[in-house]
Length: 546
Image 1 (tube, rainbow, N blue to C red):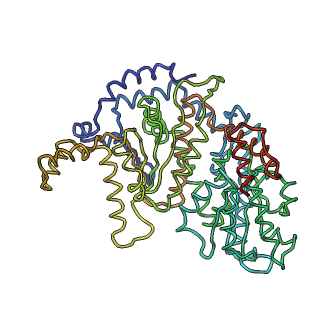
Image 2: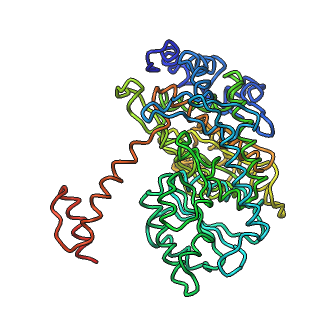
Image 3: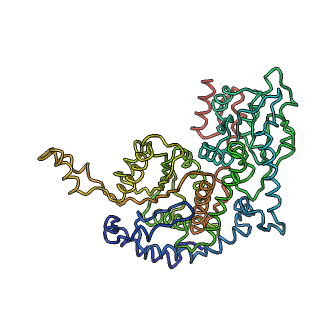
């Protein structure tokens, strides 16, 4: 059902005229308990959504929208393994990957938990062998460097998690990630490495993904160029995360070193599966299992908490409020945590590949906005790049701010300085600076007359810029699992209410198909005339230049 046809949507439209005139500064002044009303504590996470342009009545209408679109039934359908990815006729069961061992989840009348646990046990055995020095390179040397070769979900999730959990990494192991098919990327990685001590993880479900296999073949050729190596040694330095046994064997990888995942695991939801092998190797299997456990805790919260106290549901509803009623076309993710620097990139794929759709469940083009542009960077660096636009630009840009209460590294006064900026930025976005405040500030600096008049308008901040603050005690594997799961479910909430399929990604295909057609044209010197004039001109310029 189109959300715009619901009663709740109509009520929200009527409420918007009132909401558009709300000032958060005034809401806080009138209600000293606003933070208590609009914040939720879950495990060691504090979710503060009080700095949003909402009232209790507006939140109730947003919850009514979730209820009227049968969000609760949709949640149960996903967890039960119904084939909610209808364009690909697949279930969506990444949540099963982190379910406890005693859970039973049936798919096509088969309990899938045993096969999940079997693959986890296989991963655990491999991790233990490598960490205990039982898995050695062809010359008997210990593995010191691991290179994950993948793209999309086979890259962004594992890289983000490895970066986030660096304090938990195994001493003596260096992790590298290659995804871009630009030859410079793999060149810069390989030149740091020794073939005798490097393990490559080739992550591709089909083992035919062009970018991944191109990079994998280059790594293979690099490895075999060493005089002492031969084809038999490939099995000691390459493992596969795939379902295509024939292609894996043809590459030279022992099928015993192939780790499996399933078509009910979408790429951008796959870090919980064997695609997370790089994570398990880098931080150890115990920490990988803690990551899964944290995600499962958020799954339970999402499935059981009432909507008005449900963190992913509220995140999703607030996003709809700003996207569809305030006309916001982007959303910023700003972690005040060095270890989460890659989180915005990960959320960008998770959200934009999921909800970047214009066709609804009935096959009709939607007449309302769906997935916003997701972007961001780590604070405090972000303050000195794009915060000017958020504070005083002409666009409304809702933002999520994330920060730990306890840092991994206690160095001088760094963390207090760091968090003072975290707290100050959300307060400044909410409060702004009035004309009277700006005038008093300028006068206190000795300005008056024409000089004050010329500068005054530039010193005013409108404020009333919405933000969510997500604080957590410390960034440990379990907490990270909860945060990732939280964003996964937020995306699901929005996709369901927008009446679109969040789990396919057909928009990725067209460019890939055209690239495969163009590639043979680049292998000769003939002038190209088969495309539009722009594409012909670009290809021919490339041929002339090379």
